[in-house]
Image (cartoon, rainbow, N blue to C red; front, side):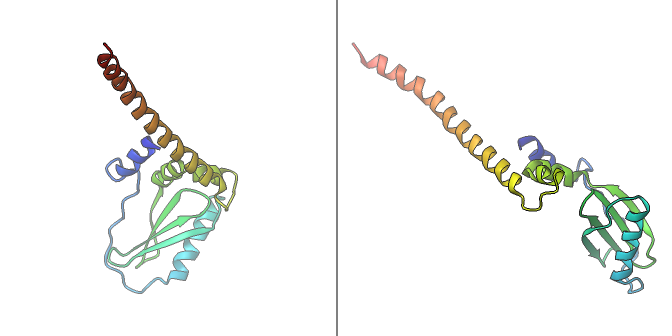
Length: 152
């Protein structure tokens, strides 16, 4: 969790998250339904799952980012022309899934997130046990030294 947490903190600097392509500001020339259809057609052409997780519409940049549910591909589509301007692999999403344990549910197609909860709970309790035992191992020798000094 520590390593993936550090990677998530630095994801933009390490370029683990695809940058937004910058285009002219949005004009209502391509509808949201057309953008969805373009993304689905692209996923179908590569024999990938066409199920869309979300469409991040960025009118100020003139681009829509499409993230898929069952793979880590991100499409960026120009809102003015409907052209696909970028196809990237979302490494940051994979790292985030490893970090929070949802990668276990993802690999077995479990939508209930049971393994994520078990993973996060066990790691959380493990960290608490490490902290408590570390404090005990640090404090106890000092207490023993003080007791030895008091005995005549």
